[in-house]
Image (cartoon, rainbow, N blue to C red; front, side, top):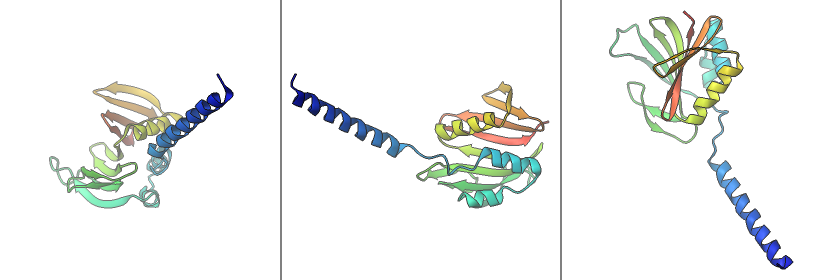
Length: 171
């Protein structure tokens, strides 16, 4: 085989590889725009507000939404990013980027922070952060996995295209 044809084949291979890599990285989304699980859990544990952190990361405020099936005491203050919410706090439209809803909630066991993400990469991004923070898996039932560290628990529920997390006191 002459040297010219080998060089031509190598050039074609390299150009195809470069194009494929560019396409792969062009579609990959950075997860750095999401709020850090470590920061949210630390602020929650200390009883400090997470609102300044959310505003710094570009989250928008929807307001207080109470759970219709429960009394007025139960509800959440909604913050969202890269999506639009209806009056019930449910996403109705997703923008480009990592869509996320964070609720500062009041429920039966006290205050908690609920984080909802809508893609698998963001879900696993948070799971890795939870494990890196030293949380240990405590229980698993009905699709919910609970990670515990001292007096803080994080309940994780994996959905088809993402999942949700609830940072709360360990009872």
